[in-house]
Length: 157
Image 1 (cartoon, rainbow, N blue to C red):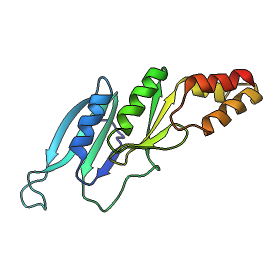
Image 2 (tube, helix red, strand yellow; image 1 turned 135 degrees about the horizontal axis):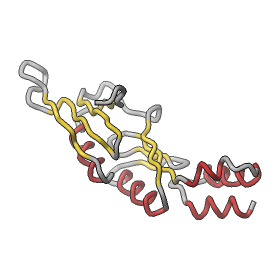
Image 3 (cartoon, helix red, strand yellow; image 1 turned 135 degrees about the vertical axis):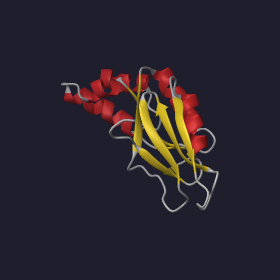
Image 4 (cartoon, rainbow, N blue to C red; image 1 turned 45 degrees about the vertical axis):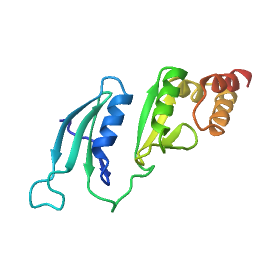
């Protein structure tokens, strides 16, 4: 296990979320699953799931509805191209996920994700401030990020 590992609180969907994320991100897998012991409020049900999602370990805990996930924590997904942006965006917004602004979304479990093309940092930090500003203004109008539109805004500034 890593020295520091994200630990996310779910009501009772830890296993389901782990299975979804492992199906969406290549090279991902469930590392282990623990169950509530006898004498606990939910003996025999899933307590936690430790996963490796595209190289990032995380632990998902089934602990009830007392706390909800929110945008204060998100997974940042670096995407090589528009196909990758589209694939992750579509998979994570399916079945009840919610689109937000500027490449952010919440999946059906309430986990926040940033689906961001690698080129965005280059556009937003370019030494030509007018071009960088144009790319920023374009991004601020988007939900799912569109690389061609970001590049067009940058190039025409």
